[in-house]
Amino acid sequence: MKKSNKLTLFIFVAMILGIATGYIVNYSFGQANPTPAEQASIQKFSNNISILTDIFLRLVKMIIAPLVFSTLVVGVAKMGDIKAVGRVGGKTMLWFISATFVSLFLGLVLVNIMKPGLSLSLPLPDTHASSGISKADMTLRGFFQHVVPDSVVNAMAHNEILQIVVFAIFFGVAAAAIGEQANPVVKLMDSLAHIMLKVTGFVMNFAPFAVFAAMAAIVADKGLSVLWVYGKFITQFYAGLFSLWIVLALVGFMILGKPVFRLLGLIKDPVLLAFGTASSEAAYPRTMAELERFGCDSRIVSFVLPLGYSFNLDGSMMYMTFASLFIAQAYGMHLPIDQQITMLLVLMITSKGIAGVPRASLVVIAGTLSMFNIPEAGLLLLLGVDHLLDMGRSATNVIGNAMATAVVSKWENKLELESADHSA
Image 1 (cartoon, rainbow, N blue to C red):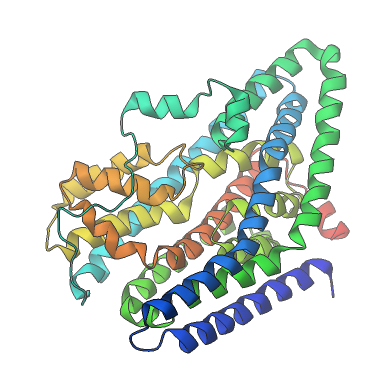
Image 2: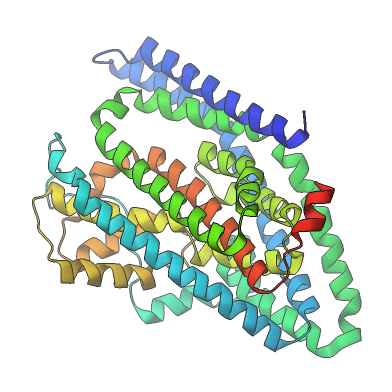
């Protein structure tokens, strides 16, 4: 069995074992009405076993900044000139904007058809209750302050991917402009990128343990009963994500042809990893490796993929319209179609560049709700199952970014499928 197939199997088995372990713990301590002592025991178990997931995610975050910076600098420097960077960047943003619109629009259409908020049989939080989620800065000034770094050291320290990308593009273009004098630095960056990819290989060996711990913690804490209470909403949202997968695959098929199915097969490991850990960032290094294995030019991968983690979070985009209108429906509020379209356009702008913000989707939704006078307290309806929903969002983000990178490679005639097939 190939190493990649072994990892897929181990992650899947770890997921099943984690659910079983979490259920046993929850069933042992949390039957019917658990006492405060039993609830404390469950919480202690969840906190302790989550250490494994926390360690893995911290290891991944340790890799992200140097990996993004080094690979992007090398990719931009090797493109040769600013015109090439602008051309690739223009095609990349065309895909991102189109994919964002489709994701938001599909979420809007599906939530209007399914109407999950109308069938919610739960007591509604008081409209004046606080959700505890800080709002996103919706101003143009706030957007650009988040995009442009005032310190690259600070951006790397906080894993602000978009800010790292902005600095790396300037650095790479400058390296290309001065020519041979930059060769030692470019070679150093190239060596650093290969070292970080090797480190990634070591870190990925811990992935099954992280997935096991993540699943055990969430099931032990929430129990399988949460699936029954929110079952319809969760099912409908995942049906929406599946619809988005089909749309992305169909568009990919129109551009890439049959190789799109090989691409989907290659990224199964990062998709499973993102699903199990509820973190698309955790899958970043492995996604990069699989895209190059597919035949994408390493320069295109190094350029498009980091941008995708700030501008092309398709699963998160769908969730924003779906969740916002779900809350409005739960409170019996009817938003006319013109307000819904306005919400979609607002989200297209405000959702960009927040990949480094914890619980980014909820932060943007909190700001959007206040703009349309929807009770912010409605977010409390989602907090209990947000982790379960985030698993699907994260997996979808990986698929969307992989598809974007492959398509841009194809548009640039930098997709070497034949040689990739022979070497696979």
